[in-house]
Image (cartoon, rainbow, N blue to C red; front, top):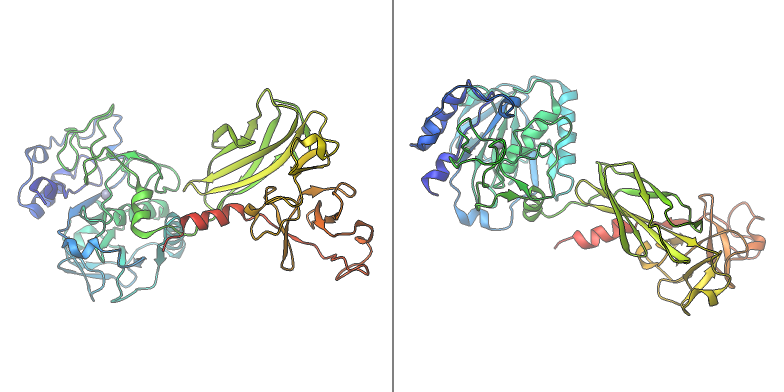
Length: 500
Ligand SMILES: [Zn+2]
């Protein structure tokens, strides 16, 4: 690596102005020489309005990596959160979390115990688990010992391992895809602010994956202030947020932008990085939980007039980011942030239309729901539906029996059905459509779906459906409630994202 990159192994300060000289002293001590820009620190404090001093700062320091060791597929999917309970001993040497004691190229000593209680710690752990949920990474509190792992020591003060005071955290840094068995530090300078501890942990460990600082405040790679949980953003975001008063990046590159906080990313020279993409390329993706989408209005089969509203409820285990409305496959509206109330098109031809709402969580995981509505009088019979494959059900044209994914077709998951409803009765799984009694085509009966509605079920005899409390009715009809397989998004997501 060239000298400039090595020096850039820069150190960042906790509080902007006052500790900057010290920070550069560390950088220079570590790297023999520093560019002129780095040494010329005016120490004048941050200009008003710049966000430099808003967070304790963290550091990344160059770690020479033997390329062969890191070019192979990542050697572990574990990140060990080491709560320095009885203290953490660190020996000097090439960074290695698997030795006892662990080795760090950044310093040595003993870090005092993490000084905050279980509540703070548990929030940090839960936060890191959530932040890493989109990836095939296990966040663990159990020391993997000599087994390969990434490690985040949390506790103590930077001086205890020979670093300058007021550092919020520090990581070795390399432009290799990852630093094998990297050991990074989050110092005990954040009080009991679990979100800041978590964000710093997420930032430090990602420096070990060649990620630089970035200007997006909601992403953990930033120095900028943010209220709330920071999560890696699945977008190309501008590198920066860490420029000094001379408008220089830690690498000594001139910073640009309105607030002089933008610079090229440390590895590769592009202006932007996609944190999610980088981490996902390294580890693969986790099994994400898609948002649960419910179309509240209109209801299936409703007659609507053009310009109607579509209201969706979208829930997610993490956060819902945005949603799309499609009608008959065409994108009508995208809404970022709720409430998810869409306005349908002002003109829509008479007939049956399929509304589809896709909700996305902040990792981009989609969840979907569909309902069919009718504009105009609706069909009276299959003849009104315009094609042989459709049948008329309660005024709407649906994919009929005998057509792929049509009513009564065998299905495994919801996506196998045009209606996106694959109902399961003890292993017998068929594509169904919502109905009320008397609406289903011949050879089907409208059967209670156990959720307050009904679905057309092949061979079901409506005349006997209410006669038995449980089990099989005297006519052989099943009478237990059936389960609707609405796992559309999950099924698709897993299929698309699983890697071998
Ligand atoms: Zn950093």
